[in-house]
Structures are given as structure tokens and as C-alpha cells.
Length: 210
Image (cartoon, rainbow, N blue to C red):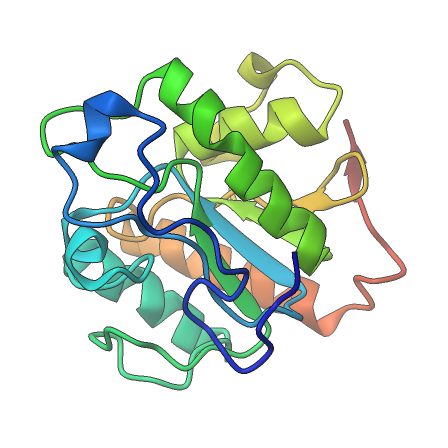
């Protein structure tokens, strides 16, 4: 699988007509694969498309939650587009999800997350980011299970948000979804992540080893 270096939307050419999860196929508007810079140091992983992304086909866009998220990326210098952009210009950031399809009435099942995992795993392997940012509780649980040796229930999204955690091959930096975070929580994350970006993070992976 090769990346289309000039493409930001689904740059790895993943199946846009995937029907592996029968319970999601009829409920979704479209499959939402990863989007962004294929050479990024930072990969942001959410649980599932929001209602906006289900319509635009681009992760973290098209609704209030997406605007809040892109506003944080703008403050970090990772997004050069307005927060309401449906095709944001990203620099050094890749956006994706645990599951690629949205059911409007429920979160994905464990089976659906497991079925979709090869898509996420392939993106992570191809991008090989320095930092994986799990956005939200579900993403933190799944990503920490895959990339650390610590039981997922030992992580806490609120207390661990913005903290660099050494994993197996990657650093993890949990993020409270900006649309759900308080102003203080968002400011704290921006300050912590800005400090990480200013550091030699390629040489100093893992302030805490787990």
C-alpha cells in the first residue's frame, strides 16, 4: 500500500465502499478514512465520525465539535485553514478514527472497532508518527491497549490529558475532545502540547513509561 503524496483525503486508497460492518452500512452517509499529512509527526485518533464528518467525509469537520478541534490545531500551528473548513490545510498532522462509519443512534460496538482496526493499523504503520493523540475516552482505551503494556483502565483522560506517555514505538498524548472540554482544559492541553512540539520530541520519547 503506497501513499498518494499529494492527496490529503484517504491518501492510502482504502476501501470507500467497505461493507465489513452490516450494522453500520445502512446508517452511515459515507466511509470516513484518514485525512492529512502522510509524513506527519502527529496522528490524532478519534472514536468515530461525528455528524459533520459523516457528511463531509473528512475527520473532525462539519460540525461544532470539529470546529472546536480545528481551532486547537490552528493554535498549535498544525492547521492553516479556518476552523469551519471542510477540507482543512494541515501541516504535520493526520486525522483519523477507530471506526470509519457513523451510526446516528449509538457508538460502535467492540466488534466493529475490532473489524475496523486493520485500517487504523495500516495508517499508523504507513505514517509512522512520533506522537499518537487519542481523542476521547474510547480512543484512549483502544490506542493504549494496542501501543502500551499498561491496562487501559489505569489511564484517566482528564488527569492524563496533555501528558506524554511512552508506548511501544510511539508516544501517546491523550486529548479531551475540545468540544467537550472546558476552556481551562483546552488551554492546558495547548500549553502542554506546544511545549512538547518545541522540545526535541524525536529524541526524548516518553516522560512516563507505561
